[in-house]
Image 1: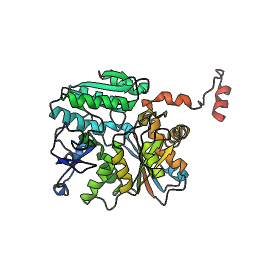
Image 2: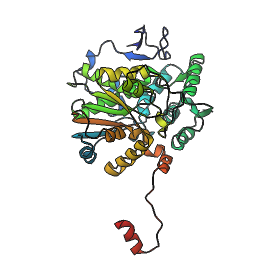
Image 3: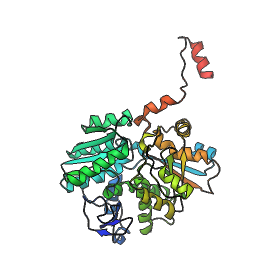
Image 4: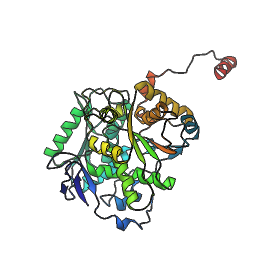
Length: 394
């Protein structure tokens, strides 16, 4: 196992506290020189650590993450023109988001590296997950948040788990810059943002679960992009599963961003040079990021998979959030509704895709305030049966 620079191909050893390339300062990825040993492995157990032979560390710090539901959505499939539509609902993880997959591995690496504390910049879900797993491992947790930009449901989790919280006067990208600088200067503070290549190894296990559940890879995977670590991690998972001969094909990766926080999707759609967004705005707080650190990895995943990228508006996100809840009974946070919003926008124009998996990254209770921007179907009535019947009939 070694670290490879995704940009200049420089190679480094297995160094848990090396977060970016020493030559060009770009993101790294974990590479396994030989996966042949895993071809005949009978993976046992449940969740993320079922795939321990394909993870960078043997010892787990776990809360029972992974093994989330892959929900067949027949009603939505018929309406959206997809023969077989599935939702991989990551809101079923212990802290309610996909971040738990990576955090269980990241915290284990922090313990192995002898860290006293762990740190992250966050729009919410990372902080909640890191704080929970740090508490489990007996480590201090430091969270940097953009002031006034994090949903209360997520912030309350970090508070409950005892994290030290700094609300930075700026946006997520300012918080990210500071926590990276801190982790480089204070080696006892272990960085747990998606810049950390070891954390992403946990997130790739979603691909393994999807393939095992379906018997092969789907035609396409649609998911939201924020800091863009997840789309690249999941694509890496599919590549490794294919190398092991466990699937016959690879899926198209489709990444979706909010219209006013879409540096990757804009570059992809316009075929122009990538540019950051100075002031990203969207009610989908989990993806309100204008300078995603893994943008090169995300662009490569889109390109190499023959995939696509697109944008959706906040109104389309809210509509999709309620559509999924009312059609399939799945309540997800706004950022998680982004893949459904994309399918609704592209209704019946999906290029012959037969089996599509949408990744919903967080539970709806993470950001209940978002629904305050949607019309509420509620009325005050007299305390009579007749009045109640009128509500039912209406």
